[in-house]
Image 1 (cartoon, helix red, strand yellow):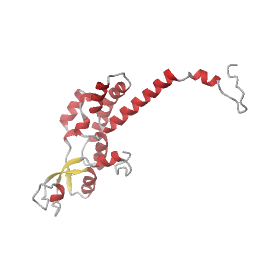
Image 2 (tube, helix red, strand yellow):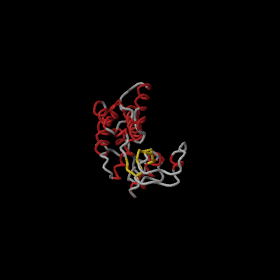
Image 3 (cartoon, helix red, strand yellow):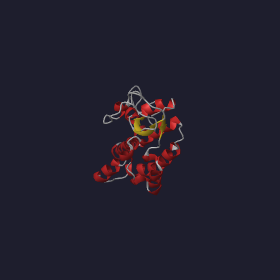
Length: 197
């Protein structure tokens, strides 16, 4: 996503904003207990109640200081240690499919969650490995296993790398060399241009 407000026409932006984030109400809220949790028998939410809210709602309530945002476990200290130990083996899709977009949205709230640096370190650690594997000749099973570990943003990057490598290979092995193309230019009147001269 380009900005913290989201992109109305992007399905990925909408899905990223649907990610549930833990928070606690700082003040009570009347009549929304069942809307937040259908299994709840309470109509009202009491101050201090812990709930998971989608990012789009969280941003608006945090602006009004109605909630305190808690750090999601996929950005916590345990996850940081796992990423430092081996960034490429951690399953970001399982943790948070929109890992980087959600980090950007939460960072834009500036609520004391140090996510920008962690997201950047995670991306840098995974990016190199991602490009190497996207450009290598791996078996379909290895590619499927690798893709299952990627966040949606990384999957798009991985696919772009694979497409570019495929296009490069087609050009390199299937097209005419660039030197020949220049020699076959035609003039507007239909005659050949002598470029070797």
